[in-house]
Structure formats: C-alpha cells, structure tokens
Length: 381
Image (cartoon, rainbow, N blue to C red):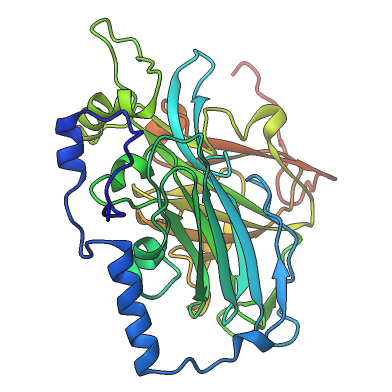
C-alpha cells in the first residue's frame, strides 16, 4: 500500500527535492494515525452523544469579511459543518505583475475565518480537487491531538476527508497546511487562515463586562519569497513544483520579498478599504502563520487587545501597538470616534511601506473638534 504521506505522483518536484521533502515527522502514515485514534476511543468511551447534537452548516466567505454568527451562544454545543476546498492557483502580488504559484484554502490568502463557540464541534470537509498537483492537509492550532488534525487529513489530488474536533479553548487560532517535510513551503505559499472560538457568553473585558462588536474584519498577514533572476527581476513559473527549489532557496534567506495583508499589496486599501461609521465598534482579527508582526491603527487604538488571541485572558487596554508572535492570531476591539482614512499597518514601517503590510479603514461620520482640531493652519513663520 502506498504510504499516504508520500507526495503524489503528479507533483513536479525533482527527485532530489522529493527526497528532502519526505523527511518523516512523528507519524509514518495517516492509516497508522487512524488506528491509534481508534484504539484510544476503544479504551475510553466518548462522553458526548454526538448524534443528539444539532448541526449547523456554515457557508464561508472571503476575507476580510466573516460569515454571519452569534456573538453569544444560544443553547448548548453544536456541530458546526464547514467545507474548505484547496486551490493551487497563480496570484498577482503587486501592480508590477509579480506572480506567485499560490496554495490556498478556498482560493484566498488567507483562507476564510471560521467562527464557532467554545465546546462546539468543528466538522470540516477538506477537498483536494483532481485539478491540483500536490498533497495537502490541515493543522488547526485550536485542536487537540494528531498534529492538530494534520495526521488525519492528508489528501492527494482527487480525494477529500472529514475531520471533527472539539473546540475546547476560547480564542482566535491559526490553521495551516502542514504536509511532512514541506510545511514552510506550503505556509509561505499562502496556505493558512484562522478560526475564532468565542466564549459561550461572548467577549468580556477584564472585569466581566460584556464586549460587543458591530463588525468584524479578518486581516491575514503573509510573507512571500519570490525568486529573482540574474537581473533582479522576479521570476515566473508554470507550476508550484517547477518553482520549488528556487523558492525554498529564497525562503532560507529569511528575507521576504513581499509582506502583505490578504494576499497582495493594496488588497485592503483604496476601493478595497474596510469600512465603518463613527460610533461603530470593530473587532479586528489578525493572523500571521510564520513571522512576528506588530499591528498599529494610525489615528486609533486597540481599546481591548488579546495580542495572542486567547479570550479567557483579560485583554490589554488602550494599546498603541501590539505584538503578535508568528504562528498566532490576535484580536483587537476599537470604537471609531472620528471620520477619515485610518491606516492599519505592521509597525515595522519598512514592512508596511516598502513591502506591502498595510490596510485602510474608511470611516464616515461627523468630526469631533473636541478630540482634534486645527488651531492654526500651516503658514509662513
């Protein structure tokens, strides 16, 4: 029987690349992992009768938008059903035409934000269409056991699988592809997203006061490593496999060529800016699956910030900039008090202004002179 962790025959990787890519990681096969899980279930009966739980099918939406959901859970735990379809596709990173052979969940970078409540069950159908060329899986940082689901979800082109896990921890968490030996290549090619596990009673401040948001936006920060030719121009490739060797070499420099929000330079600026009104409270979910980041809202603040995204911890308050470690999703809550264009950036300003890690909020409403006013217009001294 073919080892299910073995890369599919359709990949374009060279023989040498494949040899390096197949370095074993903890388990030798998905079949072995399934047998171990079955043995554990035999030894310890499942406590919850899942057949009695209500099911809810959720239709995901493309970031920065988030599917409709209740902030406070109604009733007991549910089984939330999601489907993610893996897409290998070419994406344009910048107006100069820089191109990447992206790997994505549902065709976007980042993948969609999923929302459930603590103690709900996440039931994910992961689809790897026959049109793809590579093997994939999914690792949920919110899950417990089996490499976060990675050991149980290895799918070759033309296959699908279903994973269920209990969302025991409240917070926002990264998910990403994690195929053995090729984790960084898949993650830095765009294959990551986030899941938000809300407390059943909703968000609260450090003193137990409920916190409610009017809107939620999901910003996924992504570092890309695009190889250059001998003249310094960014290279293009016909397939992910063809790009593999030179992309990995670029990755090993630890120097990204692009650091962007939601898949491309300018993806969340100008006509694509996120919107709000004066008086609206916005929850900003921000993930970075690979590198540290320092979100900052120019002209506003993080009034309540869960920098590492864990909602049962008291939030920090009135933050100017907050630190999200690589491999983490964070969240910040802010009520807009003035109209205008707010830049939302990674406050490593080189990464924001030179490499692309910037977004805009376009806020409408009445200006408040008490908060800010021009006392004297610029004039010759």
